[in-house]
Length: 358
Ligand SMILES: [Zn+2]
Image 1 (cartoon, rainbow, N blue to C red):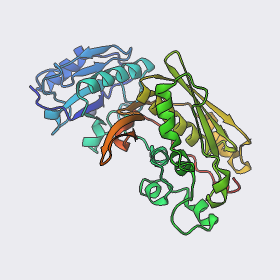
Image 2 (image 1 turned 180 degrees about the horizontal axis):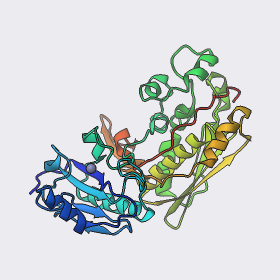
Image 3 (image 1 turned 180 degrees about the vertical axis):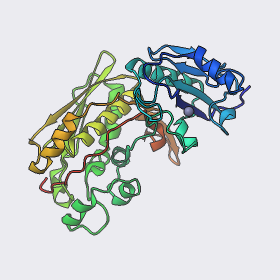
């Protein structure tokens, strides 16, 4: 019996897309290797059917050195039809949704377990032929925590704010009273706290709004807010979020804004026990710069990969907090480790020059 489960490890069978195999074949192959039958705990067939391998509580045989503390899942496929030595993300939509369901169930059962690909433990392997890694969520957490400094961003790999900072003439290594300051302290008002509380207390309110447009502090900001306000609307257990943006650099900037508000919607919904529904962007001055045309053509010519999925351990919610004066309430902001983007596969990045007149 396995005593602990630190990892959920995803593999591929390294078979061609046309090979419709499952437990039976893998069991036979693993026996031929001299193992005690199929080494994985689960197999996800090409049609999305999940087959059981070893009992979940038994020690598997799928990842050397980590079998005693992991569960192994095998996605059938993962090499090219023409050349079986070439790793290829060629899994079917049904397989992705089964993987999602299975990983969510396993996560309920083993909440501490991290989700990894075989390649994390054996760098010689490309298994399972897709990227299982987490994804950055730095800028939203920076805002939610009320921060305005460059250090946090740059320590976490977000470097594009330095140019605006330098142009602004500021010398204190902050961007001035920008997003985080206004969301958490707009003339002393913690708008985000009020929003999260309002969502709970008055979900039908038409005032669930946060604004970063602070005319009295505009001159101190490295850049006036681009996305300057958002509103939450709740109906029938579902939450919509609409944000407003005065200017949108469609190729470079907008994808970040969509991802950021999408994540914010998920965090607010999760914290309130609601379902995240529509994400609505209200975009003023939408522009594609002349020097982004080629990149945009390249971008739209590409075929999208299967969508990743977001796994949030915690959302935004209010917690009771005790200090020297007694009980108060505190806004809980998720930690970076609470947020996982799973199975995110992307095409290579398309470089484009950042325009400054924003
Ligand atoms: Zn593997």
